[in-house]
Length: 198
Figure 1 (tube, rainbow, N blue to C red):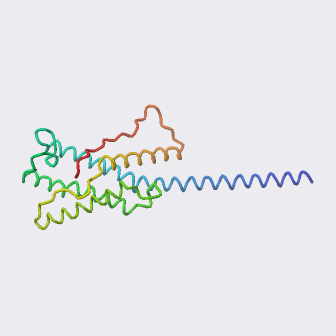
Figure 2 (cartoon, rainbow, N blue to C red; figure 1 turned 135 degrees about the horizontal axis):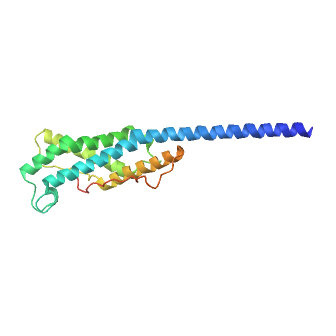
Figure 3 (tube, one colour; figure 1 turned 30 degrees about the horizontal axis):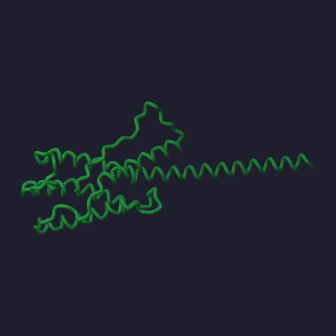
């Protein structure tokens, strides 16, 4: 009788262990699948856009800064008509498409956020884009009194958010895949863009 009880108990323990292991593996696979979506559909594109936008803004500033190195918008002498026309060209061609793409990522993929609530920095990004949409609409009507969004672009904050979010998820992805970072592997580094409004 004892042998039968021990056999049944061992079978039950084996079944329970197999069930729990299967459940753990399924949860791990679900976590990895979500993490892959977060990287491919939200944090990866947001990181790429913020880095590209920061670098192109730096290139714009190098090319269009005043002799003292400051932006025409952060100077005692107001921007000239030529400077304003150049700014409008860059905003329409480069900056506005980039920040709209960032906003669209936030709107379309809010379900992929790591946080349980919408981070204020992403709300500020969306407000900044809406402010520039109004400014650009006025330009379309020939009104050139305004050249900036009424909400400041959180350039350094959004770049840090995207970079850290991407790096954290890549580390977690590596952990779930059983990878370890080797000492020779470079850490993820990014260049924060200027704090200038755009």
